[in-house]
Image 1 (cartoon, rainbow, N blue to C red):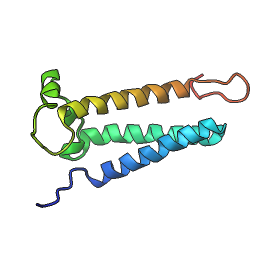
Image 2: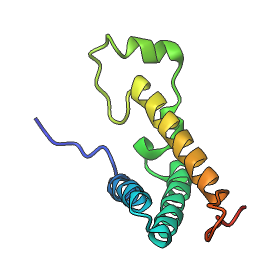
Image 3: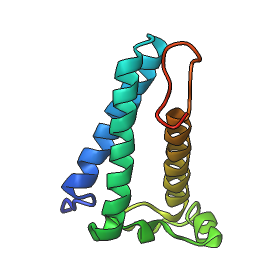
Image 4: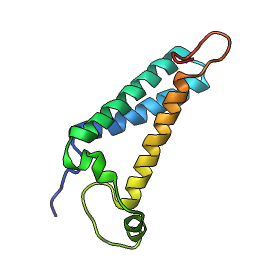
Length: 123
């Protein structure tokens, strides 16, 4: 059995940097550290934008087109034992939903205000 690297270095780094960024966003929001929260939000936004660009020019498994599957393929993937590199059909729907939710959360954060001291840049 040989090891196969599915994700390139950028994707591996992106995954762990996103974990760290989301953890920082959660912690800074809970502790009221708004300056850190803003910085982590901008960093997360930069990560997502960079990932979307890499999805256009990156490696085969990093391409956003690799996430496009039919609903039938997603349903069949639950019962299939077929293994291939990258996300399966059902997993690709989860990745798309996760990206969409992150983009909505980041955009709404740019438009938020506490009506006291801090405003997002798009208020």
